[in-house]
Image (tube, rainbow, N blue to C red; front, side, top):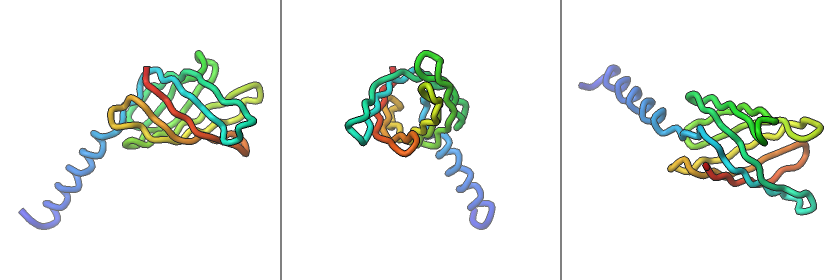
Length: 120
């Protein structure tokens, strides 16, 4: 079969295949963050992610820092408010195909750095 219906069917199959490859990040993750400016200390903390489709919710640091974000295929972005000032921190990264680790960058104010994370 050729024509518009055939092409629509192929597009539909492609969309379903893309949806099936979205990483599942639900669970507890150990995050390690390092600032680009070595005079600013980084460190580690836990985040509990709950994923509903592409939507991401959860919290970090034992529930004291709520987070929101999204997962699209292997790409992940989330934001939380941290510290005494409750300044927004944005994390943008890539989840590995197994859904067991991720890495990327974070920004807070005018600074930022790199992060890695392992699913517990």
